[in-house]
Every structure is written in C-alpha cells, then in structure tokens.
Length: 249
Length: 276
Ligand SMILES: Nc1ncnc2c1ncn2[C@@H]1O[C@H](COP(=O)(O)OP(=O)(O)O)[C@@H](O)[C@H]1O
Ligand SMILES: [Mg+2]
Image (cartoon, rainbow over all chains, first blue to last red; front, side, top):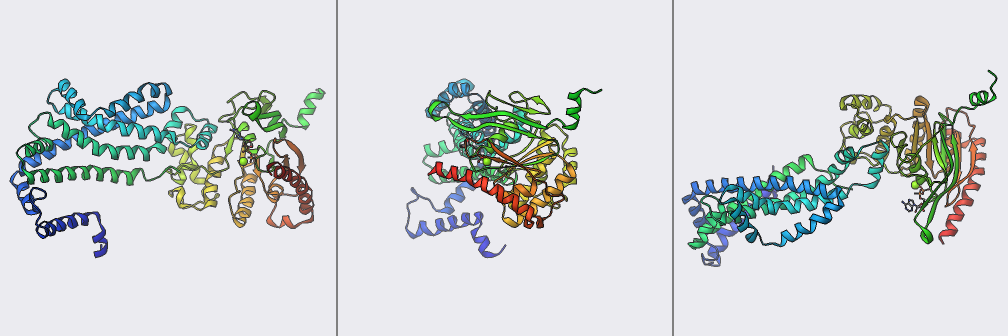
C-alpha cells in the first residue's frame, strides 16, 4: 500500500481526528469542560481499564443479542406482512405507534417485567432494532420483479420456490440496510437499558460519569461506544460485501 | 382398417399447439383494451414458426397465454397435443423465454442456466453437469462461474436461451430474443440458433419485428395485424435448409420479403395512424 492510499484509508481518519484534537485544544485554549485534552482522556481510560474492558464486553453482548433477536423477529414479521395483507393491516399501525413511545418509557416497563437482568437490556435493544428490519424486509420483498415471477411460474415454481429463489434474494440488500440501521439503535437500547440500574456496562459508567461530572470519563465512554458501533457495522459491511453484493435492478 | 378418420390423422399429424378463437381483453367498459382478437393458429410438431407484427399488437400477450401465465378469455381455447388446457394447466409445460433475459444477478451463469431444472427438483449436481455439457455449444465455455453483469448483451441472451433449452419441453416460445442485439451479433445468433434447433428438433414459436429474421428462420411466417391483433396471413417458407447467411440475397428470399413487407407496412401504418 503506498502513502496516498494509506492517507485515504478509513483508519487514517482516526489519526486525523487525534491530530486535530491534539492541535486545536491548546491552540484555541478550549476549556476542559467542553473538550479535555486528548492526553487527559487517555490517562483516564487507563485508570479504569479493567472496568472499561468489562463494561465494553457486557454492552457488546447485550447489543449483539438484542440485535440478532431483533433482526430475526424483524425479518419474520417483514415476511409475514409481505404475504398477508390482513396481518399487515392489523399489526403495522400498532408497530408504528410503538415506535413513537419514548424508549425510556418502554424501558421502565421492561425492567418491571424482567428486573435488572441482561434480558431486560436485550429486550430494549430488540425493541429498537426490530422495526427498521421489518420495514426494510417488507419493502425488499415487494421489489421482486413481476416479469421474473412470471418466468418462475412458467417453470412451474411453487410459492415456496418463488420465495426462496427469487423474493428473498431480491430483498437481501434491503434487509441489510435495515440491519445497519438496527446496529446503531441496538447500542442505544442496550445503554439506555443499563441506566435502569446495573453494575457493569458502558451505560452504567456513563451514568456515573455524568453524576460525578467526570468530563474526561464521558469522552472515554463516547469513544468506547463509537468503537463498539464501528466494530459491529464493520462486521456487517464485510458480510454484505462478501454475500450480498448485488443490487435490485 | 379403412377408417377414413384414422387415415386422415396419419397423413396430417396432430398439431402440437392449436389456438382456437383466442381473445384477450384488458380492463372493463369504456377503458377496455382488446389486446388479442380471434386468433386461430396451428403449429405442427418440430415446426419453426415466426410471428411478426407491429409493436403493441399483442404478440407478448399471446405468448403469456400459451405459457399459461394469462388465461385466454372464455371465447376460445388453447390446445396442447390436442387437449384443451384449463387455467394454469400450461404452467410448467412450455419452455418460455421472455423478451428480456431476466437473469438473476446473484446467480452465476451456470446457476442461471440450471434455474428451471432446480425448480423441477433435479439435484444441483446433476443439473449443473447437464448444463456444463451445453456450454461449448452455446459459446459460453469458461464463463460458468461469471456473474451476469460481467457478460455482454449477446452472451446474456445465450445464457437465457440455454436456460430455456435446458427446461426440456417440446414447445419453445422465444419473444424477440435478439431484438436488443447489434446487427452483426444478431446475424451470428440466428445461424447459431438454427444449428441448435436442427440438432434438438423442438417446436419453436419465435416473435420478431424483423422481416429478414422471420423469413430466414421460419418454416412459416405468421403476420399479425395492428392492435387488436389477429392473424392477418400465414406464409410458408420453402427455402431449403440448412440455410446460411447468403440466402438473404437470393431472388426467392427477396420476393418473399417484398410480399411480406407490403403486408407488414400496411399494418404498421395503421398503428402509426391510430397513434397520431
Ligand atoms: N396487463 C395488461 N393490462 C392492460 N393492458 C395490457 C396488459 N398487457 C398488455 N396490455 C396491452 O395490450 C397490448 C398488446 O401488448 P403486447 O402483447 O405487449 O404487444 P407486443 O408484444 O406485440 O408489442 C398493448 O396495447 C398493451 O398496452
Ligand atoms: Mg412484446
């Protein structure tokens, strides 16, 4: 890899942000309340390293579980909606209404149901992840080309064959769009879930940092959450490039 | 022994496909479009019939009915091997190639070719082996693992044709398969199709809007009228086979062409007048 390619790689942007941080804070003498120096933030991260690793791991597990469950449920309902107008008409408005309920209110109910278990966080993450996946699955399945459907029928294809060989592959790029939206929402769900009370997790640490006004700690956690999101998004992007590279035409 | 009916059926074999008073209307009342009107057509086994007519005259609609995708109106019926086909009965019985190649972008060339076989339930390995044997003949050797977007228009069309041929039905419907190709590729594909047809001997019904193509390929050219489309005339082509590219310059070819051109132009003018 030559220098200019390196300069344009996604990893380089991390370096750019770090350099800007290092240069701009002293240059404009920015108050640590707004943005503490990078060195302070790094030192703070090292001082809580074991907690940070444990919190990262816990929030990662909650997020992934909620995301996977939400994706499975979302794809399931998307398919059910695509094949049953009745179900769509009955349930879709309820799901839309549910989406407008603030996640904090929903979270309170979930914690009452499940207590302060990991299950509560997973359910909140699921609740946020589910909807974009369902909507995009439905939209993707509706993109199946009528002429290709006719071709398959002329071969004598059954409804199941039509679904597996045509509709589902057509919908996959859209399902992936829904999943990418769901990743970010799952993280938000897991963090909010932890606010209802727990001892481990990035959300827990964030709440404590806010309470004690530990500004560098807040920045440590912002970076940790960003890292978590980028990691999961990156995995999805790799899966997409490898397995779902075609676009509906 | 001397049953006159039996004699008749021996001398004139049962038509492979028969259309009797076939109509197709879309919509209701004021807004109704009559796409196809009173079509009577009969095709013998192994015959190569070309169908020509102005665009919008109902050719593709006719194909959809033969493939079982659209029911004909109650006035008439489609018969396959002498048997009347009810709604949907023709699905899976006719090998149909639509106007566009309609390849599946997520499937390799090889897996696109085996699509119909897979639908029929043939195991993947067996289907692939059968398709692979056809690749040299279809000029696609070495492209088995490519994806459709990596192919030229002519190659994509050959993949679609291979998919159609692998769905082994005695009747093949080809809807303007070479319509989008440049003249040179098209001429090559026509000769190649005749070779394939000579080898496999299926009944072919071939839509085109190109008179040269219709005459060059067909045992019989069927001319359709402007919409609402019906059969205007049928012309038997007795040019000797195998035919090569030079045949289009012979006086016999030219005289058939002149005759058909007059008929087709008259119909095209009607479409033109109706539109303006
Ligand atoms: N599903 C449909 N609904 C309404 N009109 C249709 C439908 N399909 C075809 N038509 C009409 O029927 C006529 C014949 O169409 P088509 O068979 O595609 O013609 P061709 O293939 O000869 O160009 C056209 O005027 C078209 O608009
Ligand atoms: Mg057409």
